[in-house]
Length: 513
Ligand code: AMP
Ligand code: MG
Image (cartoon, rainbow, N blue to C red):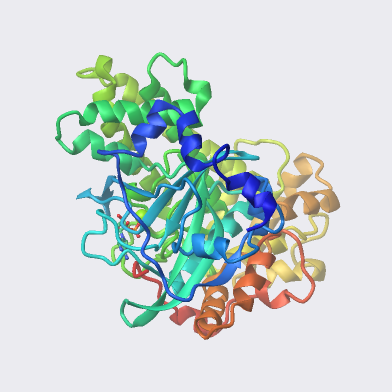
């Protein structure tokens, strides 16, 4: 380990235990029963680095040589601990596919602790480091395939400007892990201000065990004091926290929709209290635009289809609100305040969504009809299954002073089989742009900042996975690098921005991970 890193981690002045001691009572309570159980990682043989995020390490204030030596690899594969690290698994419950599932918990995630970093306190978590008291019948492992997807997408979402948990490291081992077929194990080191989920609150609200409502209050206080300190003096912290969750979830749903991201498993245990994207599983980015697209092969009813996500966000917020009722005593019997807070989602989401569409269309001012203009484009796109990412990117170059039929506009127009439908829409678009004296060149620059050229399409991840499974991690690293700057053209990467190949349609992504 380098001497600089020693300064970050070394005992006694900077060890994890001392860090705990400096933290609030509520944080320390979080590390103990009934919120958590101390548990050690299970060693994995012959670990290797698959990929890592130097940009994240840099943000955290870590030295450039943070991976140097044997120790970091051993720590980030769950084979050893830095001094003072005390791994715990936390308990939560949740609604899965709309049904109360009871106790779940960190079945394969270990919280290593919290560290002061250059960007504030951050929790560090290993995913796939072995079983915990909450593993139920599963093995506590994560396979390389799904770990590559989580690593790449966490960092890609961050680069897109979308709130998310981060991924610092991806390590792998030849150890076999049984899924539908035999695969191999991997560990993702995740980093976030907190990994607390709606499900943590639901657990202590609904477990029926004595003292759990007090724990619920501890959780509320912990999140507020530690992560949303501006709410500290709110007369009803739980109500204020609910409002915070409503606002941040509304913004998150709008952000997902705007890049065609489908989460795939929006169970309440996969919803971050801070409105971060969390738990990357069978997610997908839309290729051809189909609002009913279901990215999770296990979701046969399409509960989590792209177009349902905002509504499901609302459904999950209702579950959170219900969980908070026991710590909002004044409102027992009179739940109007809670209902008002919840109902604010009905304004916040459409507002956030319209803002996103406006930006994607390059509209600098606001008109009542902007939402309809966006929806009408989506309708034409849906009719033709127009590629979502490519259509918006090409629209950046739309020459609004020329008619839609002009050859200069062919690149976007040719994406639509029904040219008349596109032309009719494009004429409205041009009129709308004229209304604000929009200047094409300037608009293009603005639009290119919000309409990505590169997203983690399934087939890109799949290619990287296949190579990595054969021992070649270079494609994972290349994609990680590429997706750091998704809005900027990168020479030699034209194929990454192109339509998916035919074989992409046969990729099935399920909950198996
Ligand atoms: P997910 O839908 O992947 O977010 O997982 C739902 C629940 O199952 C969580 O409590 C996970 O910790 C747990 N889980 C998923 N996969 C495993 C595994 N391989 N071993 C242990 N627990 C798991
Ligand atoms: Mg989960």
